[in-house]
View (cartoon, rainbow, N blue to C red):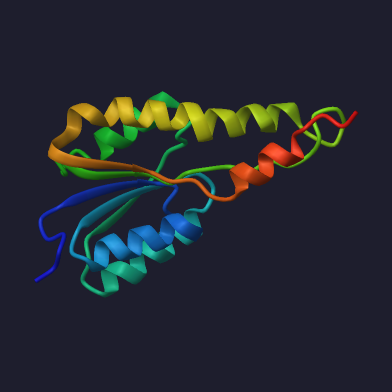
Length: 156
């Protein structure tokens, strides 16, 4: 029997990389999985088709986690899944450069902050009313956070 049979999972940033691996794993364990993507519609559709061909329940929704309105719309789009058992915050950006050089785009850096920090807060806040009792919220990061800290230091 599947460990996650009859469970519903929502994964942000699920169309590629770590997020896609999480989507695959949850679906193969029996969960119905909804995931978001921003730019990778071809990758999102490919993942949906791959998993549906295996008889698994999966749905992709275009939503930018840095935009609360898009997360709220994603919840509405996923309305057939009345309660969420697992929320995985996997969406993330990684911008490199030194803050005292012109090689870093401050708007891109702001977007990274909006996705990696505020996006998690927006998503958790929006999903809490949709969570089942005993539901789980998992927020992941990568070694990019350590790299970001060292690359954004001011060189004296």
